[in-house]
Amino acid sequence: MSKLGKRLRKPFLAAAMASIMVGAAACSGGTDSGQAPNQGAAKSAEPFEITMMNQSIVAEPPSPDDPIIKAIEDYTNTKLDIQWVPGTTYPDKLNATIASGSLPMVVLLQDRQESVVNAMRSGYFWEIGPFLKDYPNLERSLNKQVLKNVSLDGKIYSIFRSRSLVGDGMIFRKDWLDNLGLKAPTTTDELYNTIKAFTLDDPDKDGKNNTVGVAEESLLRGFNFILAAFGGGNLWDVKDGKLVSTLYSQEYMDALNFYRKLYQEKLINQDFAIATRPQNIDNMDKGTYGMRLGDPDQITRHSQLLKINPKAELDVSASINGSKGVRMLMSTGYTGEFVFPKSSVKTEAQLRQILAYFDKISDETAQNIFEWGIEGIHYTMKDGKPVRTQEQTDKYNAEVVQLEQTLEVADGSRAMQGSIDPYVQKYKDAKNAVAGNLVVNPAAAYISDTFNQKSADLNKIINDARIKYIMGQLDEAGWKDAVSSWDKAGGGQVTEELNEQYAKDTDK
Image 1 (cartoon, rainbow, N blue to C red):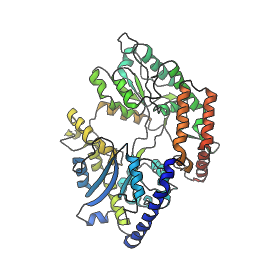
Image 2: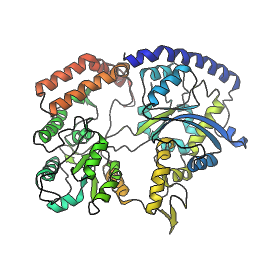
Image 3: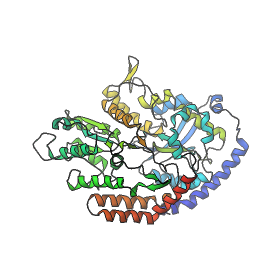
Image 4: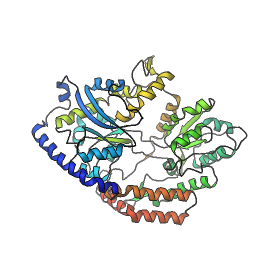
């Protein structure tokens, strides 16, 4: 068990069990199991107050009278009392709040630590699966595969914040391709040749040897993209009816060797082992790097490039036709999930009012608020479609995006279709092009107690070994030794635990 797990488990479970007893007593005396889903909200003219703990993704969190929050409150007839916690301190704040036993009605979980899993199994949070059929907007908005993946022991305890199932791709200088007479790469060989040309063939035509083909960061943000291109699986493969880690696959080795070759030939930033995403974005904006690997959404992060060089042009793609065709490892499909403690949501009636709120913010009108903002401020209707000026785009990015990312649970697909930023359209098109070629993680729906306890150590073994292998500090035998160390440190036990559940799963 990790030090954090040891520190949290006893106080967390003590608070959880005490809260369960209080919640159970309240439920036995106050629940009307035959109540219609929206009955509580429909009968009351007063807004239903919902307390919430959420992560702030900006330095200055939204104020209670923020116009977007007010618009959501007015539309859903609620009063949102949100405790915004900075992202860097959110885990510690959440742990402290859980240990105190004083939680709000809606709590954002960034990940599932061992203590959280134990609390779910102990009945600390409401199981909401049986209720979802009563909320058509919410049920429609939650991807069924992702819903299965966030379940625990076949039960659903949370509403997740939907994200694209496509999270990988490449962002590159389109003007550099044009300068070199090249087209966007569509195979692994073309990708290598493009990266090489971006490094050696003076793609910016300044007569200097001052460019690097591709930028990476310490967590190898593009590794899954390359792994998929070489035919690799999504964390786990199924062989002979059993789950096997992709770490043992030849495809994983091929992806590592692709990176190793880039590093040896100095076609990738030589500081990738310590580089961060902001640093790589900055260097690409300054004209040093020709390509970044990672989420295609990130193309919108390069506004400085166009200010520095108005003639620059970016493009994005998520399609590489590799050894097994075009493949994309399906992302988790969500970021963070909302759970509902029985200590603060004491009756089924209260739970249903909260679910009614999430159902309401998942319909077309609410998705328009999150995706477009307020008419006249963040967009204008023209010929029946919403459009934005640059000023409105800047206001939307400053005032709405943070709330769209932190409060919206739907994927925005039911919002109005209008004229959007060309780069936004580029990444949407790139993701849509591979949406039918997703490779699922066959173990995503299962829980390994060992992994919950040892994930940090297990991930460190592999991440360190990948970097060392790419940099030539390990040979292939050294890599295999590292995988063996991973197995002995708990990876083998994780495999056994997942396979036990896989064998029993009749819905796989």
